[in-house]
Image (cartoon, rainbow, N blue to C red; front, side, top):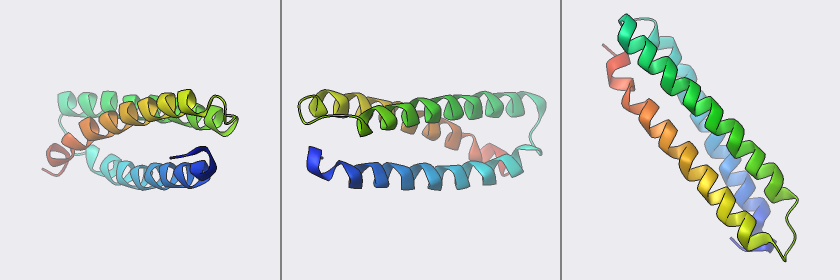
Length: 101
């Protein structure tokens, strides 16, 4: 995304975070039926997602302050934060089939 189109990038990331929040809420409801070990693994994954989401939101805040001169660097940092967040979400989602038992 270019500097001039960064707002649509922020909106897209915000929409993805909102969708993930809904998915996580659904998974949390099913986690109660897990055995102790699976529940602990799920909680660890959930904690990771929450931490990565906080980091991503900080990156978004920093990106909102970017100037045309530093946008490319800030965009790389934002992309990295998003990828780390998405990986944490994917790992948590891998626990979902276990939660459905």
